[in-house]
Length: 479
Image 1 (cartoon, rainbow, N blue to C red):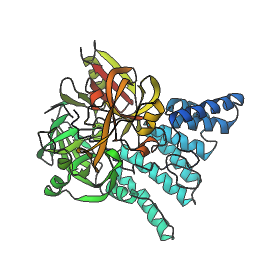
Image 2: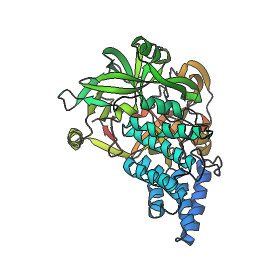
Image 3: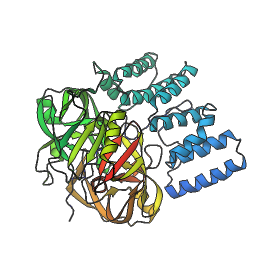
Image 4: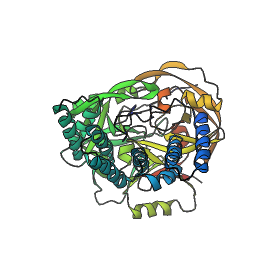
């Protein structure tokens, strides 16, 4: 029997539906207007055709860039980078692709350099400059340089003063939120420690830990499906936390809910205290008020918090371990894992928090999954209808239940059997999948195909470390 909350927090701090890119003279969404709504099988056929054309004329730069773009859309990011790197200065399209790839790999300095080159080469093209500032703002988000969001705000004001019309839904609110920080976010005080360990209060259906927000103890779940730390709306109000902006975010089932953007003075995690913490507000207590959670949950620890650390979500030992992002800390982890079976899986960080990994489903190993630990369900992964159709998996019957809800409310959900599910070299057999939480538009919304998300029921077998510096997930299998 299913008993789920399905807290799939797909909120994106730079618009879930739109990943704005550098493009020739216009704003575009992540999927080119010239690219139809393809499934993976059709895209693979296009890749094969483009490869044949390129092999026939390997000096043709246009064919090289076209092939690289298709590989990017298919999630073959290394191949795309190898193809476009020698010719990235040949066209704006090639530069655009290189920026996106550098961003995915976490090469933020290089991505910023390329964006600024494009902006400098187009000083009178306000649209190109605005697009550039949007990309730069994403980089500032990951490099904790929130104050530099003022650059984009100033440019938007300048364009409007000249009579220009801009349609940038949600962007100004989010830039305003970033600019509201008087000092750099995520200032960490280790209190003389080299690591901190937070025991789980409970492990299933999601890990729950106790943290302190502005000195107030609360229970929080760990969920990599969200961006900034998420605080319960009512608790935020009672603590005097004021929102700098708000907008409609997209959550499980494709539903939308109002999301506030604020700052909390301090977040204490065991022996560590983080000051000036970017925070989103949602009705967390209401979302988690089910028999699954015997505790009142008022916070969600998400990817942007974990990104500040070398963090291990150790499910078998029921604990969260946080270490500094240093070589010494990584060496300590490797020593801890000595003698254990360890799988290392590369990942790519899209937008604010989408950790993308190559994976397999029922024998097809050319898939791209979002690793989102926050799905409360019997299913080890969730897939949109396009993936089910591509793999020939029957669409399961779905049931609408108030227990299936995320930040936008309740939605219908159902389960389907999976023969084999894998991330990198990891494989699990005879597990279930979930259908319903991933709306059809999630398939293409990032500019490449997202075949599904892998979540708690898969991850809970491992001590899972996320090394953001080296873009590597390290899975230790308990003996």
